[in-house]
Image (cartoon, rainbow, N blue to C red; front, side, top):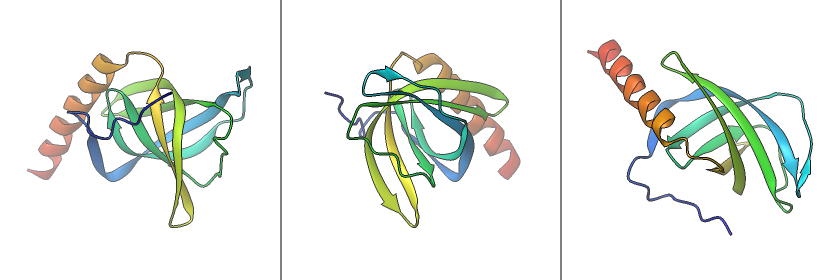
Length: 122
């Protein structure tokens, strides 16, 4: 069973959600290839993310997502399990738990993003 790591040491909540693309790659252990959909990343940590989309995706069967985005010029691609879903203001927020170790990629991208963001607001 996956546990949601809300209290991870490094969880960055974006002031403006970051645009992303996603697809469903596995449902209930069966590999599929859905078309790419539009989404926004609400927050990001080395272990997972909160993803917002207008699609209601049932998580009754184990669902695997592929998510890609660009953060401060660095492309990030991750595969993650859907852990929870919540309807918020007409959209659906999903808690995603990364399947692999993306720690270094995510931490580097977040540091670059913060540096870039701080330079823009200074």
